[in-house]
Image 1: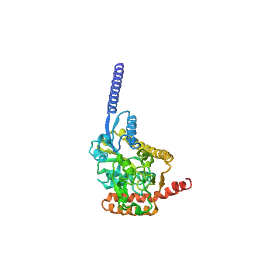
Image 2: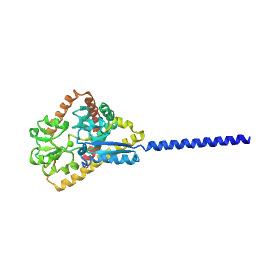
Image 3: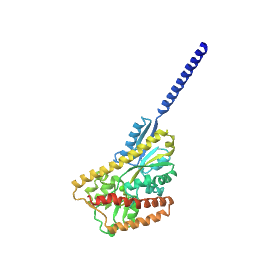
Length: 364
Ligand code: CA
């Protein structure tokens, strides 16, 4: 009996020892796995100091590094390094970069359906766009656009409503647009061109001189927060309100294969950091606009904030509508997105009117 008890306790001891060893093995394995470091590269359309746009991916890299305890490290290459500001989609698609930070409307030449993922003339404001993206079918349509490019696209921050731009002369009628030389890119540029504006594309570094010397009569950039550093207010006194980029959404692009290779917890960390930094960019942009405008208006009291006359606005709306119909015929997915946005905007605008608009109307 005694012999049997001894044998049993030895067995228990051996088995306990074995369990302890295998637990230890497991721990070592987990520790080894968790120490694998993923090194990613991200390319931006912007230069390294174009705040707040250039801040977004830098903040992303910092947050991801901290949240992942150093498991995911993202190196940022600004446009001065990779020299291809408008090649981000191709570089992320091709795998030269794991991620990119840019804006979807830059790819409209390759794929028209990418255009409305940023903003559209006379389209949704930022809160309306956010609501459409998250709860109105926007996310699903965005995935549909980008799945054929084998990349993932996420909202990457928002500039808010952009200003219509700086004009050397006042615009009083549609006739004043004829022959006007203006820098205004994208779909809005096509709208302007159809009303007789001579639309030019000038590199950002040369814009101030072009406006000062009268090579161009007008230009649009972003809003006070980013315009103030460009100095346009010193040479063009009319600052027109916006119609063409009512809530420009920036974009994170992620190579699908690189994303799928990440362990699930790092995928979650990356997606959370994307949301966090996109939100912060919108808030920062709002704050920069408010502060810069306060400074600009004080130092340059001659700046006149103007709204384009109703006649001009109506002509632009008509031109915009016509262009949308023409373009929709060439790309069914573009048409599907425009329809989805228009129908959501109709509903959302009722609420915007009842809430923000009527509140502001009585409280300015
Ligand atoms: Ca702009």
